[in-house]
Length: 320
Picture 1 (cartoon, helix red, strand yellow):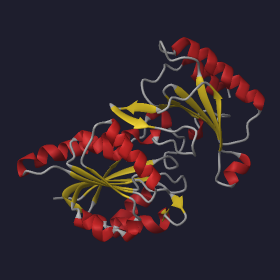
Picture 2: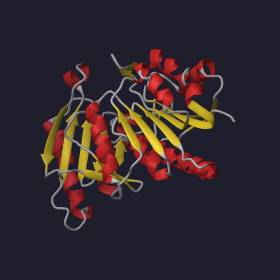
Picture 3: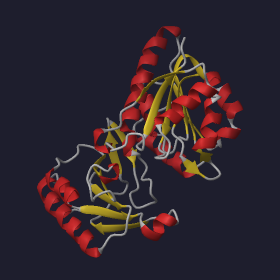
Picture 4: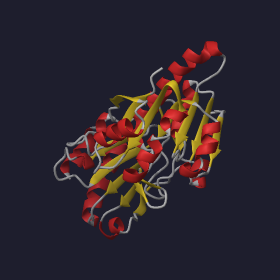
């Protein structure tokens, strides 16, 4: 646990929502179970194995001491949350989340890259903003800005399709990059409602929110295309929704019909058992019209002893 305690005691305060300690990457022996995130002003500690009260007390003391040094004026006492995902919870796909100290802001709004997002650190395992996807959101804004500049003379703006949109953070990035319209699709109405709130927080317009199953909506999706950018960030395994090994190839077959010539796709995969070759090889097989450009680097704090086990984000393009 010492590397975690050292990080708490020494790492500068993040300026926005960020992962602070990533034991899951295997670079800190003995700390593989731990992760620590900062959703200002709230710290979220997660363990993927059972934890003793003594361990929690030690970490709590370290957080209290560090907060006394780095809290901004007016922020008040330390606020931190602990989530247990190990043991029985892990086997049953559940988690136990506890507020350990302080008061969580309501609403709880954090920033990243100039954008504002609502989060809920006491509900479920996903808090509303995937911190490891920060580089993907930046690339979306860059690709859309380039497309918007290119298409300006043609009298239209860039169109974006955001599949498995969750709380629509990619849509926020796209619209901030200059997209004319973003179509957000996700089966979870609650997540899309949060996505709509995220657009309101940022004063953004031009997004559609469809609470549909992607695989039964291709006709409607195609009628709103073709698109200059397609983003897909599906769950790696969610029974009844998406199983990567079976459903990603099905999705890839649609890309040539959805993308304009010169259009781009960002395909995301967060399955430790599947490497980058899974995305590249299946894209080559199922959609030979598109080309692999590169794998996006994850934020440095998410470094992993095995890059193939970490989040994969593949950038693809349909040549002109």
